Length: 177
Image 1 (spheres, rainbow, N blue to C red):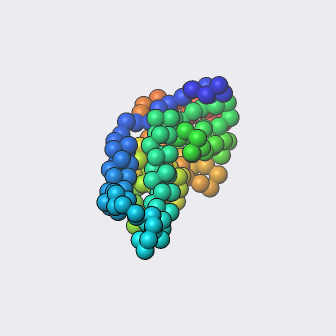
Image 2: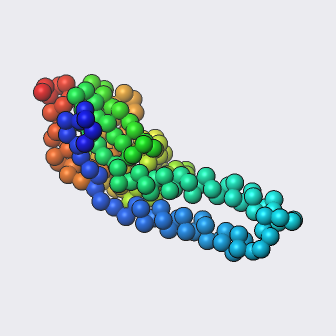
C-alpha cells in the first residue's frame, strides 16, 4: 500500500505471466539458430542479424518489463482519487469527483493489436463494443470492472471485487464519507 493510500486492493489472480513467457519464447525461438551460427555478425548475414535484433529486442524488453511489473499491480483508494497501477510502467489517477459509473462488463475484443492476451490487459485497449479502455487488468475481456470518469473508461479486475466496489462507493462525493 502506498503512503497516501487509505485502502489497497490486489488484482484477481491470473496466468498472464505464463502467456507473456510463451510469447517471448515464440519470438526468441527463431533467433536462436541464427545467432548460434559462427560469424553471424560479420559477412553478408550481419545486416540481417542486426535488423532482426533491432526489431525483436524492444518487443522482448517491453514483455520483460510487463512480466516484472505484474506482481506490483494494484488499485489504491487515496483521499481524493483511485490510483490504478502496475509497477512503474503504468499509472492512472482517477479523481473520485470525475467517476460517473462503475459496473461489471464483458467486453468484446477488437482485431486491433494491443497489450491484451488471456490473463492480462494493459494500457489503452480497443474493444469492438465500447471503444478504448485504459486497462490494468488480469483478464482481457470477461468480468471487467468498468469505471467511467472524465470521458474515459478504465478496466480493472480486483480480487475482492465486492469489497473494492463498496470501499470505492464510500469515497465518491455523492455517497459522502
